[in-house]
Structure formats: structure tokens, C-alpha cells
Image 1 (cartoon, rainbow, N blue to C red):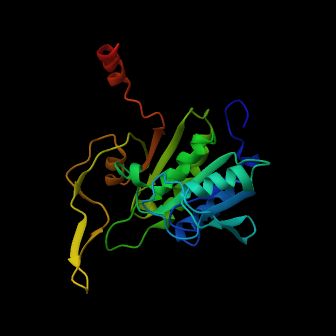
Image 2: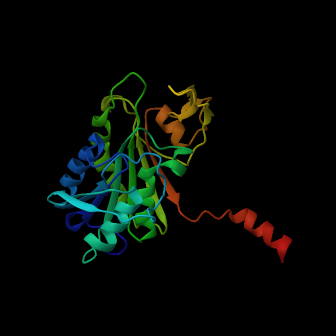
Length: 260
């Protein structure tokens, strides 16, 4: 990085995800990263970790295993993967950029608080490394349109790397669930909010015990204009800057008046 900009030609890229090292999305992202840099490393979960959020494994040892040249799997969470990659595997020369994904399904609105995809980028950001989370939306009854993410990801990455990287910020990128030719361009967005329908299924197991199964989020209602949710609804690629300082600044000022 020079003058706040990342030189892709000399960039060391670390890839992770939450769908697991054998997922289709991470292989798409490897192809994209391979066209941007010759120095690409993959450290990803051994098994799917969707919904793991920013969880860290502390109650048991973790194992990392090399599965191919510059490809490693860890029996832990996305956060574990990034931490081990940066602090151990690549400690002699840490990555210049971390890319997480491409996730099978969008990560917009409230998803950011649950997403292991976003969490991997979050961990990199906390370690001082520029990071992006990339997700591919898809619509029920249709195959996941991986070609859309493949068509637009490199351009988004290049554009974001042309500017100085903001402090404590990751970029959350979502590709619309339509073929590339139907995508309506880019949209810089804020984190949205969805009217979430009930996604709990309940039943009784063969032993007569009740169970509850949390399913995919089902949307209801219209999306607020200018948000990531609205961008996907309009078939646009959503690019959202996510800041890791969670302080509510206006409330902070008011609260000081109460306690000082």
C-alpha cells in the first residue's frame, strides 16, 4: 500500500468465507482474485459456518490443514480462519487485502449481525487490513447466478482500491439475483432494514419432543430507498461502507448530560 492506495499488481490477497472451503462461491472468488494478483491465499472453514457471526473458538484447540498450494482449511469459524491466517500462516508478510465470500445468498440489512461472511471481513478490519465481504443474491426456484458476481466483482474491487481506505471500515458488496445482462449497475447504499416474516418452523420429532428450526429470512414489505435491500430489489450491485465503531454518537452526547 502506498499513499493509502493498494497496488493490485503487488497485492497479497487472503480469501475466506463462511460456506466452507469446497463451496462454489469461494471457487468463483478465487478465480476473480487470481486475475487481480498472483499472490492469492485461501484459509476457509472446513465445514459450513453460515450464521456464525463474529464468533471465536476459545474452548478447544483449532486445526489447520493444507489441502493444496496456498489453500488451507480450519475446523473453526470464519473469524478463526482470518485470525490464524494473519497471525500465524502469513505473519512474515500479512495480506494487503482480505476478500470474504462469495456467499450463497445476500447479506443485507439485519444479515450483517449474523453473517459469517461479513465477520471474516470484520476480523480483518480489526487487524488493520482492508477487507470486503461479497455475497450473491438468488431467488427462490432459480439457480444461484454466480456469473453475476463473477462479472462485476473485479470492477468493484478495483474501484474501491483506487481511493484511500477509510479507517475501521469494511465494504459489504451484494450482487443481484439476476443474470449479468439484467443487472442495472452499481448503487452505493446504506444498511437497510427489512420487515422480516416469521422464519421459525416447529414440529415434533419421532420421540414426541417438540423442535424449532430457524429457516432462511423471508422478507415482507417495501425496502427503504437508498439501502442495500432496495438496491437488490432493483437488480443493482450494492456497495455499503460498514464502520466498526458502533457508538451512537447523538445518544452519547445526550447521555453525558444525564450522567455528568
